Image (cartoon, rainbow, N blue to C red; front, side):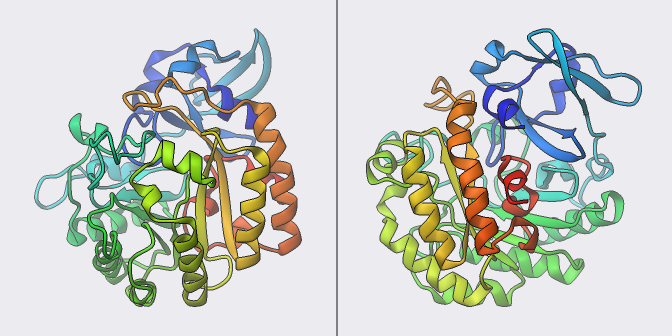
Length: 356
């Protein structure tokens, strides 16, 4: 899994890649597969994939495909079927797949606002961000209403057995930073179906928003650092770097006090320029606070300024994940105990494999 997520996977059958995620927020240019009994997101459409030693053969009638490394069969993967709820439309005629998508076998995900105050501005935009790409191609809509989200979430639970939901959003302002959108959306979904929800946003300007999000039905919270050292943050995400590491740490403390130990997490993208030592050092501080550091390999997304940036090598990820997994295990801060969200899903990183 570690090697595949760093190097990517070439597909002999081009039709298989049609339903892979391209552009957007979250895991893009990926495809979900079942590998060894778990769902894994593997890059299939990045610039570097053409050099990957891994090739997936054409699936058989059961959707099973051989994975070959340099011509030698090393494993088998299964391509999941398209979810049933994708066949439906909302009352106002919007395809359910434009409202929310199945990111893993049982995880529903949505971007509430498919835009950001920084996107498209060279001076402030995060260089890895592709939030506007799927909007430009018509794969999603700009703003998902609470009513639409509730309708789709209920169908996804009933038709496809979805177990938890991720709500992220582009940053709409520099005050609540999306917390208000999360509140109204979570409240609507919880009124329609009993589904654990993770909300994701930047630290709001007032810590009272953590209590409000919790009261509206958010079960766990993600506030994503992406990079951990000041120089990398300033270079890769100059606008977001205005939210200082000190503010993030204060916000983590306030959020853990509301959501509980292990129910607050952060995304860290390995491969942007931070050293393995820096990532582990910050992770250690986060774990002490009760925050789960979800370290994933950076994936260079086509159409972004970093599309030709190299993905981290398997060797680099191997410097981080085994040590981090042992730290999490010792602290008893495990992904399986998170109520909802990316770290609970774990499909974008091999980290959970090192917690056992």
